[in-house]
Image (cartoon, rainbow, N blue to C red; front, side):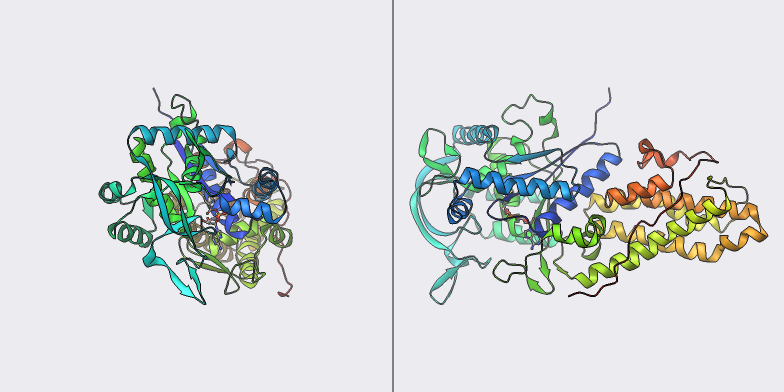
Length: 512
Ligand code: ME8
């Protein structure tokens, strides 16, 4: 019996208090690339994204617009779905926390925690930031001009209300042992240390219900309370797999292989989430990866500064795949990064149009012109060919290894090392002048270039699915051979290649 290899990866579910921006697109893009790569490796993949629709923040946003919360969330959630379509995300499901199945999953998890003695009724008194939907301890609060703030800069208010609590304080030791036993659970490593020191500094019980507003999942048996939005939200990762029905096919995907999150919400995913799961007797995810924060031309992205980057406008201006490429190429995944139009244009012009696009165009035009558009065979190999061919052959394993660490920038750098090698190799081999001097060598050189281009386009397919799909069309690689394992099977000599056309358009205008 063969066991299918499964891979489950998720994005945060985004708050629907406002329309999507570049940060949301970024997290989901990273997940999309990994999902596509894992499918290409032959794994059965479940890639989940969606929207987080309850809580005070969303309720307030609806109120400001004079809309009923459900109508408001229907509209904004749709904008996130459209973003996923426009960004060509390959998510297998899109979950909304206002769905009935999700409310049922939350209620089931709550009851399980209650049965296991993990929940008690008490009274909450302390600081709460609606913007973060988070509670803060007195030692975390700072004051400026009479207003109190959380470490994130979000204003806090004093909350005093009856509340159910989760016995988080009982889980500190168990969490520390868990981080120790699972050194890869939190990535990157610097973030891991932050979480460990936070847990070591002591955990207090967590307030998990609110009574001062209504927009949430009712607490089973006590409808004066709605569940704390983070307990509700985190549960989405198991709702989507059919929880509480653990007999479903989808449940086999649990536990998750990677939860992709931004660094702002690591605490919820690396502390609360495993604690809830362990307390409920459910398996814990393998990894939470917290990536960094984008700024815009050096400034924090915020609505009040009016510098929110709309991913759809960027796609309209630069094309989808250059944007997808830029976001993962420009900044090491995990670090903060600055978005600049000039940097995007630089990457598009030099790396996509020049390095990759021209290499393809030059090689394929020569095959078209000098080989009647048919794929030549290898007739006159040379020892010098090994450098290029070995580098191309090694690429899938190198890219796979980097992607297993979510090191998207390293994966792309590996690909560009080989792309640059392809360019220096074509310049050294000069197939355009071999036409007059050595036809057999010319055929061999062009065949090797085709092999290199096929390898490059295949490993880049998850990053730029549309453009690399076109490149593979031009290379005459059949749809079912666009995978890493299929690279082992050569295309037959004489395969007819369509006339090539440019893959990327350079952008020459200057930023406004
Ligand atoms: O936190 N740079 O939702 P949210 C990079 N609903 N990434 C950014 C970013 C930026 N400037 N701004 C946002 C929530 N992000 C909760 C999550 S999960 C169970 C519940 C990305 O709409 C990043 O992934 O505030 C961040 O963690 C997420 O959007 C926050 O989205």
